[in-house]
Image (tube, rainbow, N blue to C red; front, side):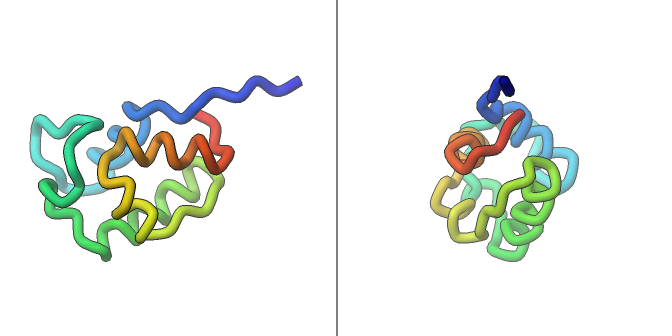
Length: 82
């Protein structure tokens, strides 16, 4: 039996901070709009997250989620594991 673990917001935040230029002090609850993450960055983030977590996520879903914490919830809802 496989144990599923929800995706942690800290994991998504780590992906965001190591792959993209975001301000120091960015948290899992920092709003993407406040971080100036435009649609092209969100498309790139979607690709990185797909490779990391194995689930498809669209740019508009990331934009709607708006924070790393909400993206973690989205990925978990789509069946991703941490």
